[in-house]
Length: 549
Image (tube, rainbow, N blue to C red; front, side):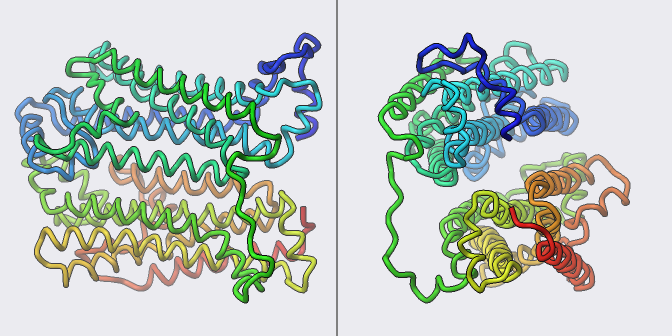
C-alpha cells in the first residue's frame, strides 16, 4: 500500500494550499484500488438488467398476458410492497415495476461501499493520515470518494439505458430508467458521506447507511401497497420511491429527477460541513465507553466474537424475517401471477426444482435465503482478516489464547448466526404464508425446515473463506466474495439458462433438497457438512503454521 501511495502522491501542482488539493490524485488512487471490484459492480448491473428485460420480453410477449399481470398486481398488495406500483401494461412498464426499485437499491449499495471504503475505512486504518502528510487538502478524500461514486453511477446509468434500448425498449424511457436508478445511487453516496462523519468506524458508518436504506425501502413499500385510501404519500418521502415515481416507460416525470439531484447535493453539503467540524479519526457520534471490567462472557474469544457480532446479526435476522414475510404473503396468489404462461411456469420450476408451482416458488425463496445467509457467514469469517490486519488480534493472542481457539470463536458465531438468519427467513415466510393459507400449524414448521436445510451449503461457501484466510489473509476478502458471487450466479441463472450439470454441481446449493414438496435426503447434507468441516480444518491448520500479520 505504501508503494501505491508513493506512486499516487500529489504532483507539485497539487501542493498548493486548499481544502481540495490532491483530489485528482486521490481519485486515481481510489480507481486503482477498485480496479477489479468496480467493473464487477458495473458489469453485474448491466447483466441483471439484460436478463430481466429479456426474460420479461419472452415470458409476456402479448398485450393480453401483460394485461393479466396488471390485474393480478392490483389485487395483491404484497406484490406492490415487494416491487412497487405497476404503471401501465407495456413491456417497459413491466420492466420498470419488476426491476427499477431493486436497480435503485443496487446502485445505493455500490455507492455506500465505495464512499465509506475511501473515507471512514481509510481514516480508521490510518491511511488518510499518511496521505494527509503529503499536503493533501482536508476535504480532498471526501471529494475524491464522491467523484468516484458519481462516475460509477454514471456508468451504471449508461449501461442500463443502452441494454434496454438494445432490447427494444423506448429510448426516452430507457434513459429515464437509468437516470432514476443512478440518481438514487447518488443520493445514497451522499448519505454514506454523512454517516462516515458520524461514526468512528467504517462498520458503524455502513450500519447507519444500511439502516437508513432499509427504513426508506420499508416506507416505500408501505406507501406503494397502501391502496387508494391508505398513506400512499409515504412513497414520496424516499429516494427509492422517487426513482419509481419517475415512471420511465409510462409518462416520464423528468422533474422528479430534480428531487434526487437536490437531495444528493444537500446531503453532500451536509457531509462537507460535518467533516470541517470534527477531528481527524473521530466521529461526531463517539463510541460509548464500556464498563471498567469485562463480564464473565467476555473472558474468552467466543464471548468476544459474539459481543462484536450481536448488533449485525440482529439486523440481518430482522431483514430476513421481513423479507420472508413479504414473499410468504405473495405465495398464496403465485398461481394467479403466473396465469397461463407456460414459459414462466417452466422457468420458475427449473429454479425451484419441482413441478408444483407454489412449492417451487417457496423452494426458490429458501434458496435465496440461503445465499443471503452465506453472505452473512462470509462477512463474519472475513472479520478475522480485519482483526489481524488492524492489529486487534494481537492483544488477544498475547494471552494464553491460541490462534485456533481465537479463530474458532469467530467461526462458531458464523455457524450460529447463519442458522439464526435462516430460521428468521423460514419463520417469516411460514407465518405469513400459513396465515393466508389458513394452515399455520403445518406451514411454519415446514418452511422453517426448508430454510434450515440450506445451512450445510451456507457453511461450505464460508469454508472457502476460512481456507483462504488460513493460507494467506490477503487472499481472504477476494476469495470469499468471489466464491459467493460465483455460487450465486450459478444458482440463480444456471437452471434458467440450462447450464450443464457439471457447472450446476459447483454450487453447493444445487445439492440441497428443494423443500418444501420433496422427500428429504440426508446424504447430500452430510457431504456438504463434511466439505465445510474439511475446508475449515485445513484453513485452521494453515493458520497455526504461518506468520501473523
